Image (cartoon, rainbow, N blue to C red):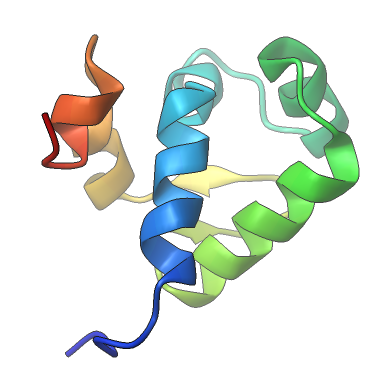
Length: 86
């Protein structure tokens, strides 16, 4: 069961979905530097967010990132809807 006091994981998920990281990974972009460039994000910051999500089980291997089935389901045209907000 997730820790109800953990606010960093929902925010990290929001960041990667907003930046369309799962779609970028699905398109074959897997290196952090390339992901950051494609998402127009800072590479170090993106790596830290992804590292957190690796620990939470949403991604595997932070330097050569692959999304888990949970994140693949989150890919959609409306990032807010994917996270359950309106």
